Length: 187
Image (cartoon, rainbow, N blue to C red; front, side, top):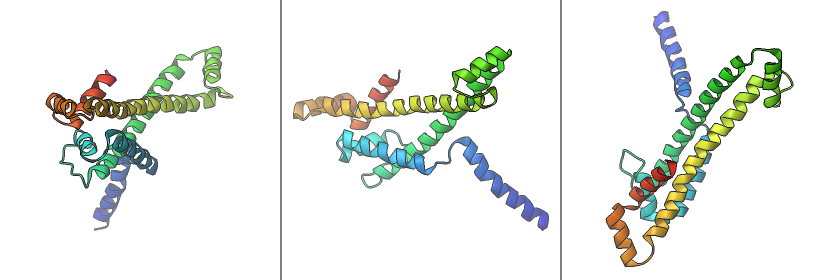
């Protein structure tokens, strides 16, 4: 019985650690950033049905007017966590490679100088943190393109009945427009 209890306890402890490594564990910062992004998307899209449609384009489950904001925050909080984890992993790989290429004392000193480290022992950490920040900033820039796409769609939809009808014929709904424009900006 003790062995079973020990195994179950260890298993329960390992699951959260594995989830954190997978990048699906969100932090309060991830949620705050997601909330800020969703508020901006809601404002940019004009709110209401347009916002619901823009969020619906991201989801696999049905989004209603009542749960659009919550689903948006949930989706982007998870996205922020994945971006942060991915940025960190890429930075670690890049810096390991760069550090391993520095063989001579001069190259090690140059590596330390490049990242503003006092010595070669702290250069690796400074390298990882600077590259991870740069990678995360790039991912956040891609998220901002969705906001820009929503602005473009709102402008394209216009206010006249003729423009709105042409918009509906071309895209079917606001979310489809945002998805297409965001993809075009990313490529």
